[in-house]
Amino acid sequence: MRANGLPRRAAIVWLKSSHSTAHGEDCVEVAALPHRVVGLRDSKDPEGRRLTLTPAAWRALAYRTKAI
Image (cartoon, rainbow, N blue to C red; front, side, top):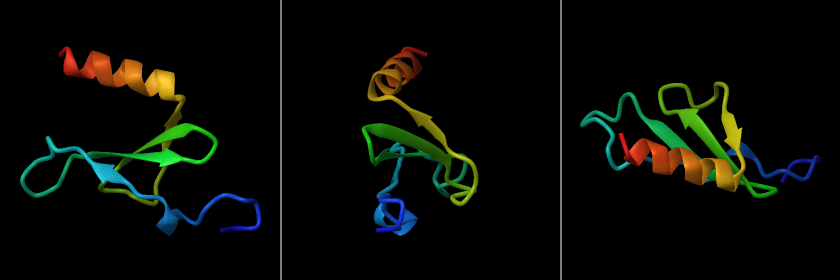
């Protein structure tokens, strides 16, 4: 735990899509973050920028993505 109350990045469990390529490239990873926030990141750049969504926005994105 860091001084700001958020867990260290290593404590966050990132899950990779089951639809990833065979070599694990071009993947989006998702994690449940503190304060009821869903995080998304690029698996090729795990220390890079992240997108954060509310749980409702995550559900809407997942629903719309599955419909494609």
